[in-house]
Image 1 (cartoon, one colour):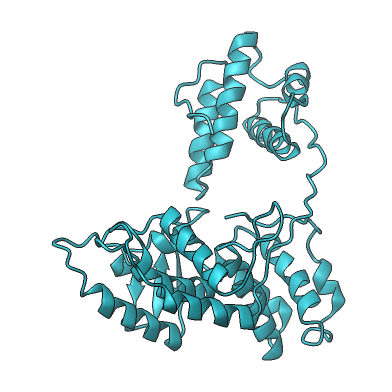
Image 2: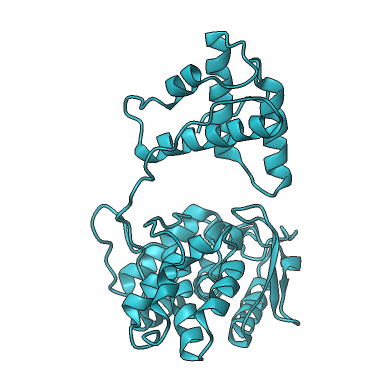
Amino acid sequence: MRKISTSYNSVYGAEIKAFIKIKKKLGFKYKTGAAILSLFDRMAYKRNEKSQGINRAFADSWCQKRPNESIRYRYDRVRHIAQFSLHLCDLGIPSFVPKLPPFPNSTFIPYIYSKDQLRDIFKASDKLRSGKVPMKSSLISIPALVRFLYATGLRINEALALQDDDVNLQEAFLKVKDSKNNKERIIPISSSLVAVLKQYNSYKAMLPVPKKSGYFFVNLIGKKCGYGSVGYWFKECLHDAGIKCVGRTGLPRLHDLRHTFAVTSLASMAEAGIDLYASLPILSTYLGHQSLGATNHYVRLTSNMYPDLIKDVDTICLDVFPKLNFYEAD
């Protein structure tokens, strides 16, 4: 992604700054939106736009499909300008609101690990040996980290950003601060995971490091685990467990532990007799989703994988939200 400009020179500059500030105060990181508005400002400046509100001619020019542009990016480009235009209208500045192009369909379906595969992955992680590896290797954390990702459903960046103070093993909860949507959340963890993490802490305490980094998951020199190192060792686990990557998608992936957590959690709640209307908001909050719609995809996956568990659930439940085949990639 291009570097985001912090200076806006067009007639919309002041309102763009104010709009981005509002978005961030609402809890959005808004990196993509800010980058798009920066490009929009640059285009407005080059065209020497004078109208304080966005006119239709300029909006139509902005919304045109560009060479080699993905359908998804064009959709986002139009969506953010439509939101900004609505903001101007709310301020009493008449502005044309462009119509959104069709939402980009996706045939992507996340990989869901079976119980046997998870067992084999855990065994493979326990058998990993260092040999001649660099001290920056995350090997010491892999057995605990793999179990942690499956047991909590956290994104890998959220897990690696955890500080020691964020992991409360006495009261069994986590404080997730560095999240995708920039919203802090506190989530409970199971007693079995607490036991795993206590054992990991005992190993970590034996590392010959002069100064602690403060991160919970660390490499052999006590510093924060690198994503590349974690990904390397996880692929080793998949290989040793006999799980092969399929096609161009690269599935299965480390992130699919999160998808597996979501599906098995819904299935477990359904098996326990918890109503879907109650379980969906719980899971959505736990996963740190912005909306229930993002979590609803897992309802359909669960209905396909565990039809006997939720056969008695009102099928209207499955269509409460639009059928957008879009899963988070990270």
